[in-house]
Structures are given as structure tokens and as C-alpha cells.
Length: 507
Ligand SMILES: Nc1nc2c(c(=O)[nH]1)N[C@H]1C(S)=C(S)[C@@H](COP(=O)(O)O)O[C@H]1N2
Ligand SMILES: [Mo]
Image (cartoon, rainbow, N blue to C red; front, side, top):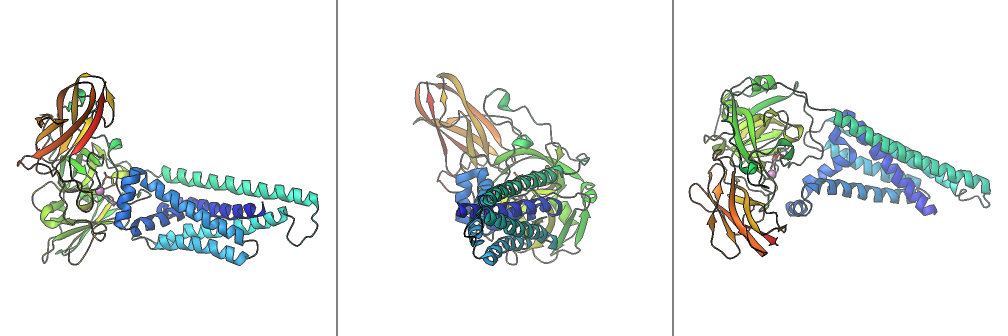
């Protein structure tokens, strides 16, 4: 009982610290909340194979799993601090100071950290130590004190109630602080900006197959359904009025422009399908949207070039970096600094106020969100976040196709139906998509509207489904006649490959 109570003291002290830190962080620097700061550091330090495993195992829940683990580990250590508090209070306090100190160090060592980022952890330290000492005192009184040979029952009774009351109070206040922090952080929305029109607009999007083929991905992915992949536990909140885009490195004259200056440049509008290198065969880390932005070469041309850079290193507001081959940037494709997505300003999660979009390349080598700096450099001199972690430097998106309907392992009624999905071969264009059912021949499917080589293509094949278990495979070929790679490959280091096969039961 005593032990349990002491462990609880430690756990509650940690909860109070974490909650206080979170609340303070909401006002000072949301990403510097202690658990988040440690979580972000763990993300950066996790070896690539482990990260791959976590993404494959937990998918988009990977961040929640990570934060849960950090929290669980912290509370376990805090319980130890609680147990220590009985005989060795200095050690117990030391442990809490160490834990919160680590969080503070983690916050300070983030790439774009400022001194204020240590403040949430200091608040956590103060709250944690204060609660530990106070609750441990109450716990001692609840057990009647150690050296009191004969405790008076009534004192013990009120002491017990005192401890319970204190514990409950700490728990409630901690919960309120966390909720308060969340509310405050959630209230900070990006400012609404009026987007200028494109001088070079996209053609109206044709009508997609989704109207006729049930279950197929819509031709354009709605923004709220668009996949999200980044290393951020907290979405950066960027103040568009103070935001700037810098162009530096091997340039004739470094340039710094405000959002107003950037959006006053000639704007293009393009339909482009993005894909994440972590997308497994048949996976969902792909989305197609309409992007509004300034040609990347127009932005770079303002600064000029000196020497022979081969890499465009882009930096996000949080210090995250992406490298893009300069030859790709300059080969005439519609690489852009995007400020709009699907007719609206970029959402916070998709990189407000500006991001890179590079058609044909996986996101990790060309789609920097929350962009703030473009640096002309060389691969010999500088490496970006994922390249340092052994991912490919040049990573064109591999041709692939996905079956959207029927769903894998589903049961469908016998009769006339359709097999359908999307195929992509960005910047080369989809030439044909074929489907094979069981051990049959590869049959050509009907393709949906053509939105250009940088966009995905819907496809479908009418199917007279007979009762039984069936295997459906799909393969795509680009416009140059190159079939997708059939050998299975994992996403690391340059994207997955292989044929998707879906098994369905027809009854
Ligand atoms: N700042 C920043 N930009 C980033 C990333 C990131 O972690 N941080 N991830 C990249 C990756 S891996 C991909 S696939 C795309 C995803 O963009 P989306 O979340 O808008 O779909 O963003 C890219 N840009
Ligand atoms: Mo990605």
C-alpha cells in the first residue's frame, strides 16, 4: 500500500510536470512540450530500418504509438522516483530534474530551436519537483509517519484522506492543463489569405470515373483526404506576415522575399499527383491535387548562380531539410513553390504558407512543406535529412497501379461488376493498365480521362464475377512502353515495386 502510494506520487508528479510543460508550451512554442520534444528527438535518432518497421507496422498511427511509448517510459521512471522519495528524497528529486532536463535538452537541440524552447521543460521541472515533495509529504502522513511507533488512528484517517485529496487534485489540474494547452494550440489557426489568380491556369478538371465506377478513387483527392507524411509531432504554425523565403548558397545575390512578394510573381496552376516513397504496393500514401504556385526556376533566377551547384537544398521552418537534384528542377517540368492547393491556401498540415512541389519525384526529395529557404549547393558539401539516413538522393516515382475496388479480402455478389483503381507514372505518363484474374491473360483496362503526364490515371475493367475465390492483379505501363517493375522491393531506399494482388470472395 505504501509502495503503491509512493509510486503514485512519482507518477502524479510526472503527470503534473508534463501537463504544466504542455500548457506553457502552447503559449511559448508548441513543439517544445516535453513529451513532444523527446518524441521528435527519438524520431530523428531512430535508425532507418526501425523507422521503416514502425511505419509498416503502425502506418499513420506511428506518431501516436511513439508518443505513447515516451509517455509510458517517463511515467515508469517517475514511479521509481516516487519509490525513492521515501528514503532518498534528493535522488527522487534528482531523477525528476534529470527527466525534465533531458526534455529541455531535446527541445534546445531541435534544428531550429530558440532559447525560449527550454521554458516548457523548466516549468515541467518546477511543477514535477513541487508535486513530488508535496505529495510524498502527504503520503508519509497518510501512513502515520515512519518513526511514529503508535500512530493515532484518527490522524492516519485524515492523513489518508489528505493524500487522496491531494492526488485527485493533482490529477484533475493536470488534465485541465493538458486540455487548456490543446485548446490554446488548436485556436492558433493560419491566417486566411486571399490567393491571387494564376496567370497560367490549369484546364478544367475532366469528369472522373468515380461517378460511374463505385469505389474508385476520385480523380482529385479532397484536401482533407490527402495523405500526410512528415517528421513533425506538432504541425508548425507559421505567421505569414513575418514569414520569408530566402534564396542563398551558390548564388550571385542572396534574395529574401516576403509572402506578398512571392505571391505577386507570375503564378501557374497545375494538376500533380504526389506520392510518398514509403508507399507500399497498393498503399494510400498518394494523392492528386491542383497546385497554385510560382515556378521554382523563376524564384531561383532572381538570385542567379555562381559556380556549379548540383543540389537544391530546401529548409523548412523547423530546420527539416530536403535535397532535390538541380538538373531535375531545371529540366522544364512544373516544379513550383506552391501557395495553394485545390483552390484554397495550403492547409497547416500540407505546408502553409508555402511548399515545394516537384512533379515526378517522391515527396522526400521535392515537396518541402513549411518552406523557408532554398540553398544552391552540392551533394558533396551538404546532405538533407533523409539522405543522411541513407535514402536515395535522386528518387523518381516508380510506375505503379492500385486496385481500389473490389477491396482486398472483401466478399462481393456474383454478377456484373467492375475492377477499378488508379495508376501512376508521374512525368512519363500512364500508357496502359492491365488486369489479370486468377491465371487468365493480362487484359487491357479502360482508362479514365487524361489529365497530363504528371497526374494519375483512373482505370477499370468490367468483370463478370463467378462464385468462388479470385485473385486479381494489376500492372501499369508508361507512355514510353516501360512496364512497371514486377520484382518486389521495400520502400527503402528508393520506393516500393511489385505487382499488387487482391483476393476476393464472390458469392
Ligand atoms: N517540412 C517537411 N516537409 C516535408 C516532409 C517533412 O517531414 N517535413 N515530408 C516529406 C514527405 S516524405 C512527403 S511524402 C511529403 C508529403 O506531403 P503531404 O503531407 O502534404 O502529403 O512532404 C514532404 N515534405
Ligand atoms: Mo514521403
